[in-house]
Image 1 (tube, rainbow, N blue to C red):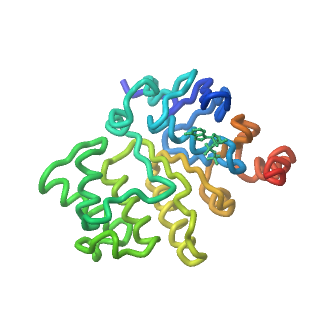
Image 2 (image 1 turned 120 degrees about the vertical axis):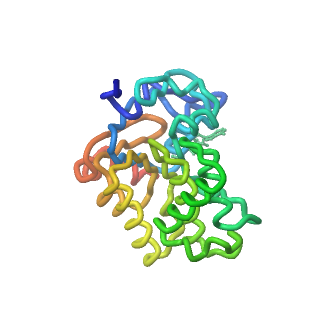
Length: 242
Ligand code: ADP
């Protein structure tokens, strides 16, 4: 039977680094096909939360479940295999390999494993999807920053993730690139993908997200539709104090 609850649920998750509580008893869920933004001032625990969802860090306490089954005890590669795909704040591609080889790696090591010709064909489709197929044979190191970001998105999509984590994917883009970037995320929304994004670009949060979760000092201080949350006095105070 298909699981009918949340795609992802974060249940009372805390992460300590020595004496520092980076994430404190976080609780939220993400429905299937939902796009949820995690926002908050610098140092509020957003990246730590993403790292726990993708398995880079284990929670100190609490649990994270995907489609009802617990993933927070699993190694990161196993979480990827179960269907959590992520992009990183600083693009993580293999610079000496070609664009296509990087995306093939995403298809081979992703959720729905593909090999050989099938992986290559799928990689080409994902590169077309982000407008980069013409650059398939270029070395990644020769690409502009936005193009590297597109390739990273293609790499993650090539693994057919059930849940996509975008960690400040729009950061560092100039205004024209930002428009293109937002359009690409809009396409993911139209495809009905389940996406969690950490983002500082509030226009993007407003236009893309169904819901957002606001963190401050490791704690969830608000949750709801972007328009409501972004006019919440407590949220405004948290940002002004940044
Ligand atoms: P955000 O992504 O919202 O800017 P982070 O999750 O990066 O916040 O950081 C939350 C807090 O946890 C910060 O005080 C940061 O210094 C601390 N922190 C994050 N990662 C580590 C780590 N690996 N070791 C120690 N402290 C960390």
